[in-house]
Length: 45
Image 1 (cartoon, rainbow, N blue to C red):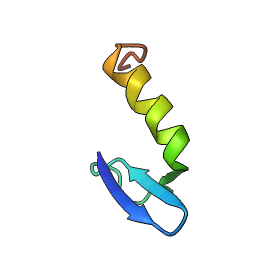
Image 2 (cartoon, one colour):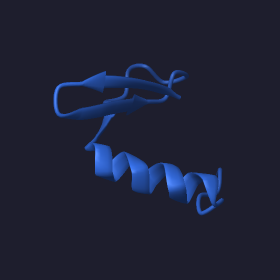
Image 3 (spheres, rainbow, N blue to C red):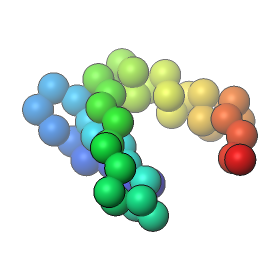
Image 4 (tube, rainbow, N blue to C red):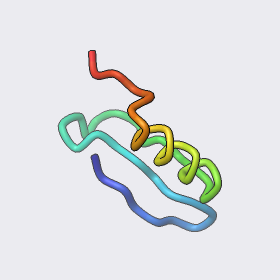
């Protein structure tokens, strides 16, 4: 995963799939995502 700060938020992308569109997060959304990720709320498939 790669994270880049941009005007108004952050872009998150899968470094193994650079052709895919990155996800845009506001600072608040990124905080919620990071908290959920750290808590193990996502599963790899």
